[in-house]
Length: 308
Image (cartoon, rainbow, N blue to C red; front, side):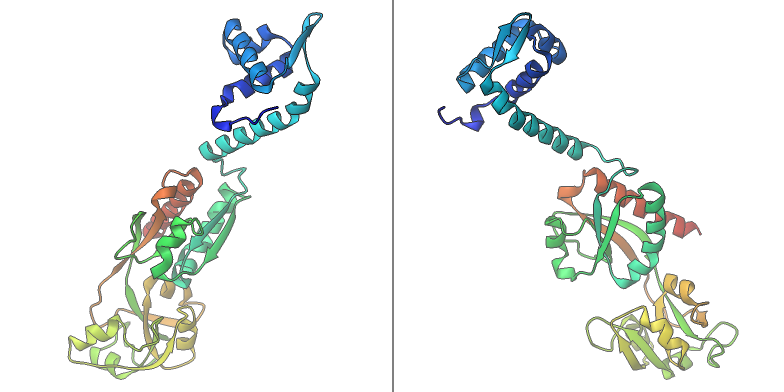
């Protein structure tokens, strides 16, 4: 048989072949596809030309497949099934039965705050979904989203990359923490002078000793000594619990770990700006049903956190 150019093949012809194979009748195949009998007869004629074979011949009251039709049938039926699965998968997402893996780019902070309620939510609504979390460098987040390595990124994105969509999920601010019984905290407050004089702990990814607190202190003509730095925010509360250090950390982490780490929370004696935690996703996946479900779940959880 001569080589067939796929671009010249009408997919409807293969669907007609499938119907003829199932029904053994031009009339019944036409009814199955909800087309007229002349249209089905025309499709059969085109199939015969395409494959250079009669494909179906009348024996008694039925149209029986030829040896050629029997030989090509498995491949055509498999191809049609794969196409149907691909089209269905692209159009529908049923969280209750889906086993899809969803990947979230997140820092240790957003992971700590959002992942426990998100996992609880997904186990209830989508028990077979797999959740993967990975860290990321902010300079690479656009590429990771565009390439599909991350479905959604969580964090602070003052300048979102091109071809991404952005949505705020909650506002955060700093509070101060010290160990319980620390003498510098009186009636839940700490003076500005004491705050500046105490040794501080700081979370930093830049390997420096400067943060938002230093800027606020500088505006008051004050400086602090950073006695301990770590790139891991979750280390900080435990370090504070066993020392006389003071630290400023996001309010949600302080509230979650105050009891576990025996911490005292206090309002900072300097003014710092709150910041917005957001989720970021690629424009390419904006209409993907699974991605939309994940974003909706994150938003629902964050709204509950705001009201609790």
